Length: 229
Ligand code: SAM
Image 1 (cartoon, protein in one colour):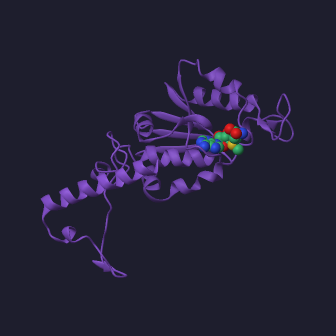
Image 2 (spheres, helix red, strand yellow):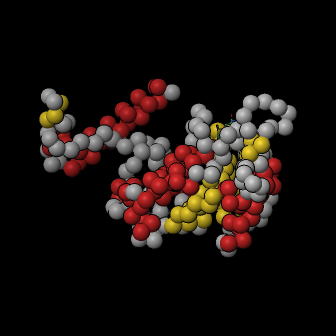
Image 3 (cartoon, protein in one colour):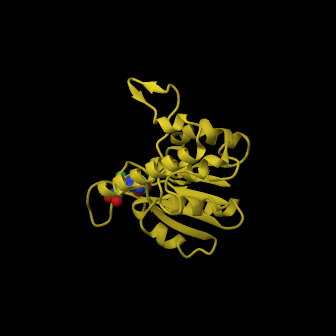
C-alpha cells in the first residue's frame, strides 16, 4: 500500500517515521511520500492561494497548483487511486471507512489550508475513471489544515494493513468492531496502585470467568457511551 500526501508542509509528516508505522515503512510493508504543492505553483512567489470570489475573510487555495500536482500523481503511478480530500464538510471518518480504505493500493491525501481548496478541483477529479474520490471529515470541528486530519486517517488505516501491527490478534478485540462494540478496560502490574486494586477475577486464572467479566465490562462501557450521546 502506498500513501501520498500533497501538502505545503511536507515536514508535518515527520512523526510517521516513528513507532509502528515507521517500522512498517522500513520493512516496506507500506510506503509513504509527500509531494510539495509549491513545486507545482508558478510565479515568483510560488503562491498557492488567492482571495475568494464573492469576497469574505481568508484566502482560498488556487486550482492550478492542485490540478498540476494531482495530474503528476496520476502520470507517475499506474492504476486507480483513492483521492481523499480532508474537509470538515465531508463524511465523518470511522472504523468502517478505515477498513475499506485499507484495501486500496494507493491513497492520496490532498491537504487543504486557509479557507480550503477551490471547489472546482473536487468537481473536476470526481469524474476521472482512475479516481475514487472521498471527502472526509475527522469530526465536527475545524482544524488549521488537512495535514492533521491526514495523520489521523493514516494512523487508523495503516494499522489494518497486514504486517504493520506486530501481533495481528490485538486488532480482533478492539473497539469499534463490526457490531460497534468497545474494548473492555485493561490493567497491568502492579496488582494494587495508589490503593486501587485490579478487578480480582483478572488474577484468578479462570479464563471463562475472565471472558465473561470482559464481555460485561465492555457492555457497560458501551451503555455509558450511549447514555452520553
Ligand atoms: N473554511 C473551512 C470551513 O469552514 O469548512 C475550514 C478550512 S480549514 C481552516 C483548512 C483545512 O483544514 C480544510 O481545507 C481541511 O483540509 C482541513 N480540515 C479542517 N477541519 C477538518 C476536519 N474536521 N476534518 C478534515 N479536515 C479538516
